[in-house]
Amino acid sequence: MSSGAACRMTCPVAGSCGRVTSSGEESEAEAVVFDERFDASTLHVLRERVAACVSAAGMPEDRAMEVILAVHELAANAVCHGAGAGRLLMRVAVGALRCQVSDAGPGEGPWPLRQGHGLWIVRAVADEVTASSGPQGSQVTAMFGWSPLTSRD
Image 1 (cartoon, rainbow, N blue to C red):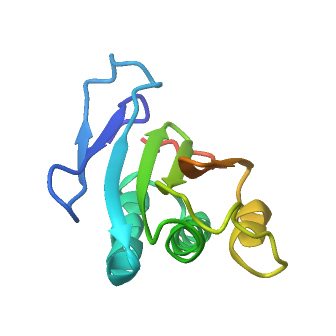
Image 2 (spheres, rainbow, N blue to C red; image 1 turned 180 degrees about the vertical axis):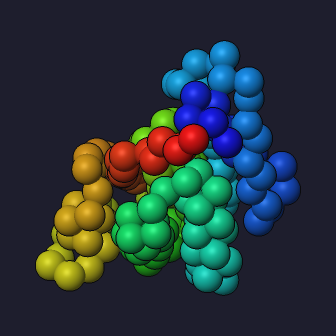
């Protein structure tokens, strides 16, 4: 794949992520989307699907492991402290991944911030974290950046 080609991942059915490359004429800002609902019984499956999608996006393995951990912690928070289920939406652009986890609330209130757990881990590994909580639920978005490798001729 040439360094100028844009990449788009699609997840047409649960658990499948495909990598589609363009001629390189599309905008680098084109979003790559993974969108899936989850609950306690599907957290392990969600983790596997996130791993497949970050790999397909070309993220380095060490950074990918941080994303997998952070997304799992956010999803577990949605299940444990939210309404018992949630939604993960991932958007990828060249060298950046945004992971948004939300629940429909109401839960126990804002997700807790305790050292070594959930949001604390996410804030430690993500480049940027935004969070909001209210009667309609909670939403946390974590952004992870990396330097895309350029192809060598």
